[in-house]
Length: 508
Image (cartoon, rainbow, N blue to C red; front, side, top):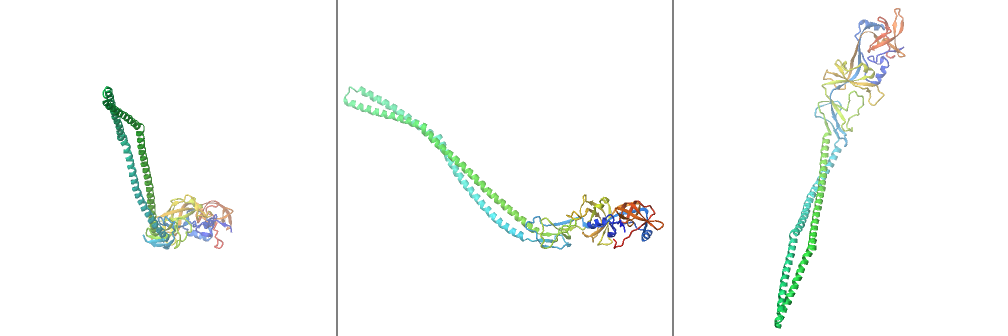
């Protein structure tokens, strides 16, 4: 029997058209279905006779896909943001368990966190003790600095006073004393000179007097001459002392006192520098220890927060769904049970909001050009017979992706979302739904059932029954198609009777 041109849709694996069945079986994303016009009794009778009279009319192109019901909003339950000490589950609720807001959903092992907390508590005690000792050292060093600075300041003050006293008081006073001594010696020399002259004059006048009187006058002359020599020596000595004071004593004493003053100033500067250096060092040591205490305190606060965060609670009322089920993704997630090691910020589960839903479907790549935003759809829930939802396409992916993440050989699909304003308390995320998308209304065209056509070497054919009962093969050109009907552009005319090719289940 020739290969049939079959719909890849509602008639499932029984009919194959252009190899679509193979693609959909690989994709696992549902079947392209149609909702044909209701057939008249005459049409039913014609089908029973395995013929179809070609006619002009209308049919609806419907695309039927399997989808999944999902909540518009999911409340995520994330693991703690820091998992360096491990996030091993020791208690977790079962999947799809009803929960209340604030109810414990999972707990992680606190063992490593408590050990770390003990280490931090001990470290905080040690660092606090070190800080206290450093503060005491700082206070003691400050007192020592004050004592050293006071001693240095006293020494500087004494040297300054000694220098200024000598410069202003002692040196001028000593100089005035030497000048006074010179004046006194000069006056005494003048007196001695007058006395010696007077005695010599008296002696010269008494030459012709008696010898006793002359001897007495000679004694006076000798005595006054001696006093004159002494006075002259005194004047010479006092002048020499003044000369020595001016040339040596004053300058040497002043230099010595100035050097002492300079040394006192240098020592004071050294004490100031040492005090400043020690102060900076001590302050730096105290500041470093304060930062370490603050850091350990902050680490301790964070570890307490982490310990508190090891217990996860439900943020809202709802049904817990373990794992991170992303919309439109076909990917096996690992089992979340007691003993599972989670990662930081990993989503442990979600609680969907059950007030608003959407439907997630995967549009096969070869249907992308036929589907666009805004198309209406009818949604039926497989688990709830009789419940029909109305919706429309609201979101389509701009780029194609593989049906199975990480498998480039899987078929290309466009992830699509449909909105629905219908609510029902029986609806739950994850329910499987059938989506019938009204793609197009084909009006006033020649069309035949898909069973009337078959493929051979890439071309479409049908068999037309002649009035004599004989049949002939004709090549036809197809137009638009649905799951049940195909538009015929050329090859047959209105009124022709075409054979319907039916295959048994074993042949299919």
